[in-house]
Image (cartoon, rainbow, N blue to C red; front, side):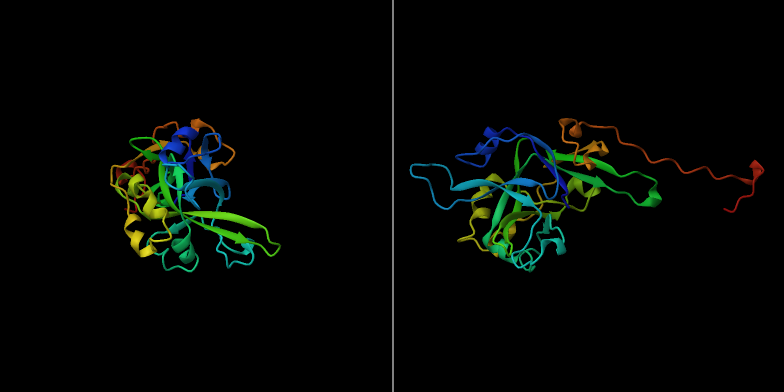
Length: 254
């Protein structure tokens, strides 16, 4: 699962990483949450004359996928993630997998380790980022939902896959990362069918990400500063009480 992420690189670096000719300025975002607008990259509609850049453009969509056949979004669950293993055949995502694959620029994502109640441990938030730093691309899907009055809303979801390496001890899912050399293939919905790009929806190598424990302030959408990514010491689970023995003058049932 991916329920929060961040995009903190400067516009120039994002434009360069995704080979975008133009990209409007926007502030660094340290706590991007569902239903908020997210930056996505899509295949363009035609190469600009004289341009040597790939045909791509950026736009904002709402994070929370709504299939085109939904009549009332208020009665439909918020789809912020799509499982890579089933997206090709699932009714909600089938059309988008064929026609509207996107890239979602990110600096990293947040995940929570939620131990069992029996363990006595508290839930712990982690800031998970690429070890090499810089901006990366999550695989995503896009759909434009049209209401009865003719208004339209562009919506998107992040594809997830099985977690690897250190991430697997925190959560069993993580975003699918598309490598730069595969951007064009992933975005090419004209000649690349879903089955032909299925191999791109694999977990990244085990050492690609590093996980940094952070405070639970990231739980609140109102908290949006860089301090959210500052490391905190891991809290140890409280030790269970020592069992009394008969020598203590107390009854023991064990």
